[in-house]
Amino acid sequence: MLSIDQVSACGVVPVVVLEDAAQAVPTAKALLKGGINAMEITFRTAAAKESIARVAAEVPEMIVGAGTVVNVQQVHDAVDAGAKFIVSPGSAEDVIAEAMKLNVPITPGVVTPSEIMLGLKLGVKVFKFFPAESFGGLKTIKALSGPFPQIKFIPTGGINQANAAEYFKNPKIQAVGGSWMVTKDMVNAGDFDGIAEKSAAATALFKEIRG
Ligand code: 3PG
Image (cartoon, rainbow, N blue to C red; front, side, top):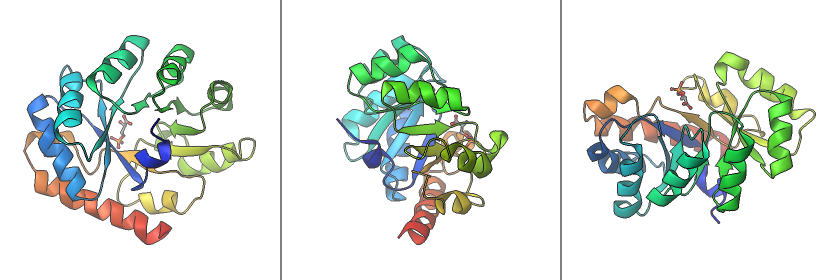
């Protein structure tokens, strides 16, 4: 089974929304060019499953995962398409348990101690903290790390090149998630050079801080 460490090795997990599966491979290649070797393709569009399948088949260096997975059916759709990891905006027991059963790493979304306790019960060690900036950002992560010193977070939601550094400096941060290096507008405009450039800046920032 792939580990969350492998998924988050470059420090940034891009949240990708694709309207058209034809955009999947060029987007994956642009992210790779910028040093990002894992991507979350969200189940927010009808193109998600096909997009995951294309990246899995055509860009083997990219670790492709599924995001915005909110039910058990989507866990199966994602894994069938070739997703290597699952991200959920929240914490549903059946969704977490199904991913675990299929041996696919899952980062469920949390903002409260009770959600963390549910995940811990099911064996989760790295959680998505979402929506990060709306729920107190680093200040809340520091508070949650008191009772839960054993876990790490991938904060997502409102993070960008300007505020990522403060997260990277905290040892409880596994990586950050976000769409700033691969916005819908950039994808739709075919701005793959821009995606590669912003990805390179993000991964360089992580390296600069974490070494
Ligand atoms: C997510 O779905 O994880 C967030 O919408 C990504 O947040 P961002 O667009 O603020 O980076």
